[in-house]
Image (cartoon, rainbow, N blue to C red; front, side, top):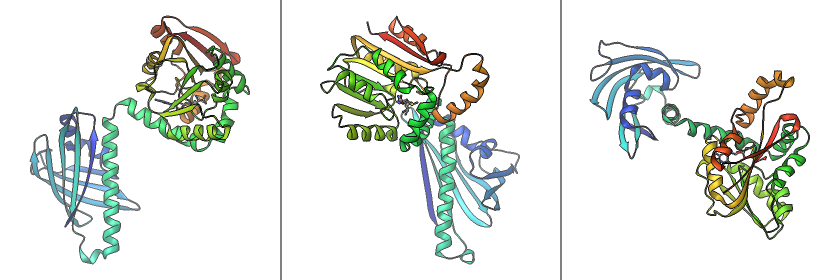
Length: 361
Ligand SMILES: C[S@@+](CC[C@H](N)C(=O)[O-])C[C@H]1O[C@@H](n2cnc3c(N)ncnc32)[C@H](O)[C@@H]1O
């Protein structure tokens, strides 16, 4: 009988994880393919507790019965049972690690010879392993901080746009109401850059502001593009190579922990970034920390439509929320005012865009 094992690291304390995974009320939440079941004994926990349940596997419904055969409170539980007539032994173990914990699971089973040969055994072990991983992924999400989940969403959404930069450029035209160059140019102008300046663009995406920045700083200037999405950065790198810009450095990371190794930028720019970055307030504070005294932060972002077009806002919000992780309700100029002590705001494109400018004291 060979054992399949999987494990996941969680940010939550072992006690919380233990309470969640051993409570039969939560089996429907994380057991992969769970399709109903019940506790058969008066005791729901501890040695002797017995569970009967079903799981969907493709077109089949598998019936399982299992009994708790080992229980070390807070750290390990063992089960013995059978699923679709195949006997198994399984276990779950939770151990503290740093501020979080590690959840490990293991399954042993013997496929009766009459149930198939080596191929069936391989296919079954792949299926079981996949089911184990899916269950652990559910637990991982259950205990992940909200911002980590939002960052995963950013990576997913912008992974798509980064792989399709031409499509991204097409949506740009719609987002900026046919005037992307004008608005992007105005945002870069607001930085007041001189030739030779050092600029950081936070959430630079595929580099659609780079040409405007290059025009302002010239070949003697330096530009750092920072983004969470590797795919967006890859598209930005392709653009730089195509345009022959050798003064651009691209850095991958979360703007909430923004660090490029430099703290003396003349200007920091973020266009349509702060409405997508999960920890956006922290990101604004980090932008300020990267500026030299007198350096300028410019944030250009989108707002919901003003009346009478505001009737379209539920649809606009839904589409851009889904396709761009857009959160339009954030008071970005308000946060800049708090962090810098001053902010100037200009509105463009019939009130759907703003450019906010703050100077580091
Ligand atoms: C709407 S796009 C804007 C891209 C570019 N600034 C532009 O003007 O086209 C939003 C960008 O924010 C980036 N982003 C979202 N969350 C981020 C984070 N936490 N840290 C860094 N970049 C982030 C995305 O990967 C994406 O490239």
